[in-house]
Image 1 (cartoon, chains in turn brown, cyan):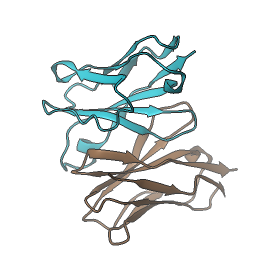
Image 2: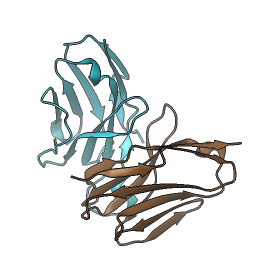
Image 3: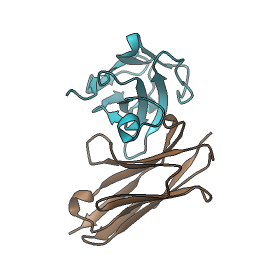
Length: 112
Length: 119
């Protein structure tokens, strides 16, 4: 089955700096890669996603890149703000929703 | 509109008792997922339902866990003979559909979770 690894497990950055979180997956059939943000005590929420026929997607300060050959994808947050502090989860699935597997999460702290 | 709701929000039970957790998905969402999240940990997939298809039960950790979805809407997750290691937050999520239709189809909307504590 699919296995998703995520690094780093914790990340601290200064406000205004960039943050990068990387994930790798094992199943070459995976074709949908969302990222979820979970603030303390709250439920996870989708922040961006990418599908396998696209190499990069950007939404304001957030971007995701996908390398299908290497089976890894990354989340990039630029100009970080304190409200970006949260746990971020990557996920991979095949058939755009089946066999959904989440990574273990990255706790991002943005220091003012 | 109303989001995904779950009940109860908190459940404390004694070891060996059965518990039922309820999830009300967003109206019209055909896909429904159950996850378990232990303190400070990631999201562990348990089971998902899609329309009238047979559910994918591949994530259920033991035969003490079962789930059903009645009428393609409300779902209940049942844990029999609870153990202390079952203590966690149980999250339910729903999405509009499987298949690619953009983020609006595949985005999972999570409920607030049920915090289960087994004494």
